[in-house]
Image (cartoon, rainbow, N blue to C red):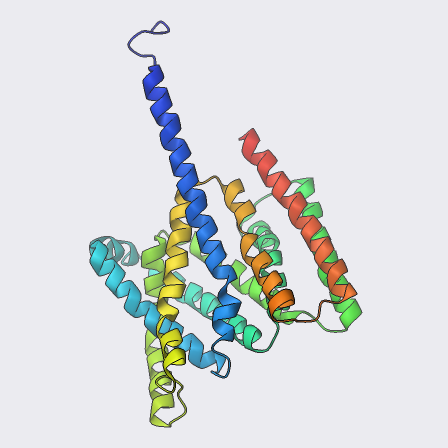
Length: 312
């Protein structure tokens, strides 16, 4: 077929395709960045629930997330698709493992916020992408470039420096990074969308959560209904859990992995700023050196992601 013939794309079609791709990319950035911005404000939300034990907050988060997702799936008429995905052999077993991983991550994070350790929590989410890379190497036999190995090494040096200078392992940061990394690794093995997967995870945890909340209510130790602002915050935990995750899933559908890789640092950067500027958590010289090494590793890692994306 000669150029300009029937088989050649018309200029108008090319322009429309370019415009459509541009709009999808723009909306993808808006969805993903919006999700990360919401996650970045989580310290403020959970700090407002100070005084409520972390396990009680987690239980409310599970129960209200389950209720909210029931409404969303019903409104979107997605029950058939969700059932088909979840009924595949092995899916529920894998989602039970991912539920344990993500609930552990939530519990540690809620505790960290109310214990005044938001700075360490932000460190965990800065390190998480590199932990995810390492887990991919170990379990999925993925290969790394030299620059990616250097980035992982720099982050390791930063964490080690913090340990040596403070005589304390930053267990909150490492626990958050590894539980979230394991969660992502497990979800890679499950062919299920974000909506159905999250519903299954909170659904599996729902019986334990509702039993625990019932026990607290029966013994007079529960905080739900104690004060209107606190009750509203606990009730809203389902929405603030599900909405950013669904926004993130929408964003990922429209964006290149390298773009998502760059946007993910919005969340820990926001948490870092809140910890130091709003909550006045101590930021020592040791923290400065450790964070500088980790930020350098993330910059190197991100630049390498962009380079690989361009080559592909």
